[in-house]
Length: 603
Image 1 (cartoon, helix red, strand yellow):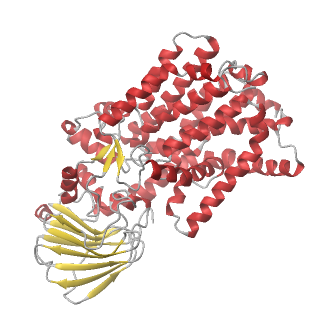
Image 2 (cartoon, one colour):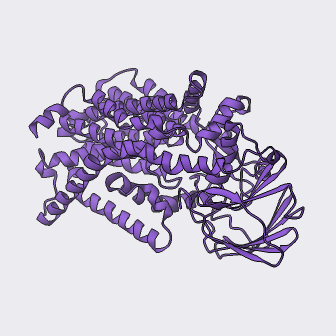
Image 3 (cartoon, helix red, strand yellow):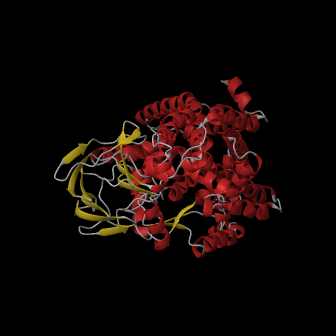
């Protein structure tokens, strides 16, 4: 044990932690392109003139009904999309790094992944420096750095090029904290100005960069005038007035105000989507989402399973999952209570961690969003584990609770020391095998037929619209394959179907209960915008009439009326079959056919 502690005290730990994180993620170099990487490639390679604003690469839909309808007509958006759907994100700093990629190595996914890994290494190295400045003794700070380096939450951003923005935002956020600490603890005059500049870079890299403000507030409340790591050992902030502590945040308020102003005046944010919840436009829905998602994210960060697994839980299963998550959080709070009473640095890490949950609760739970949460969690975990070696008074006093604490120590060691390092190299390969390759197989199953250019491709069913239908456009464009005149996705969700031919030009599709069976299905229409019986959507060459819905507004029966006979040669019909699309023939009038639940990467 003493040998390990001596190693963790060494000056080279920050560099060693950074190298360790990069080495564990080396398989990402062979991860290829995934998901949003494809539309990004189309924009940066084939249509750079279309990038008019600083956020256009990350702006799927702008909230303009006319533009939304054009995308629905093309088939990129499904027929049930809300007219004023907004999915618009402001990330100019991250976009600049992608522009660099496409200027230097536009066809090399491996070099783009290497670029992301360099940001990962920088992030972990900076976190190690911050741990040393905040946490004492030094060996506990070193332990926190290693725990953060091997945290499996880094696997997603490291393996997904378009998610590099998370690594960049977290890196600049930690730089802002380091500058702030040098200013407040060492009187470094450049600290507030550089800290404010780095905060701006964090905010304009990704929305969740606002979590840097969470840690700045936590610093003001618990470490201000505390002497950093040294003060954490022997003093508290009780003698420092609240106004003075909060006044230390003054340099950062103009930066935050400018970002909010640019964000709102530029029309950035989300609206009408069930995948994202805007805290300003939808405050009540956001608070509900926060209560639901925060415990799930905490469970994932501290003890697994991945937060992403919650998105496939419904009904009783989801309730049990949430109750288990809440129970784990409550137990953790009890176990850490003694440590929190005695350690200002532990209170700092805790508050920063908890406040960091707020911005990432605006979307569905996912491990890739835990970079800031993990920063505080690993600092707190290192202090908790260190209490078993050097500071026994920080453990719970009651014998029964001490036994529970020992059980938690065993759990944390297994999760964060044994399992997490194994998941980092495996995750990129899993993402490629279970997401990237199935998407490509589905896209290639549509023949590269010149006749397709004059046809409407009618996709009867698919596991989801985003991955199985919408992504077909950029993937086929990048491959130089023939594009259909338009796409028509009828039932592109994970539901079993009954398809009845009503007349020469009309199909009636009955859906199994739960049309929206995955989180992706809520991307284009939130639960606060239910479909209604009798609602009609007019598209070029096809109208859609909803004839029956559930109490929640999910369609149970829909009529699809085409402007020509279904057997017309201008319509090419396909359906999903075990991961690929195969030809489909509409049934004769009066005949009903059944199709099973289509299985995809997330079903």
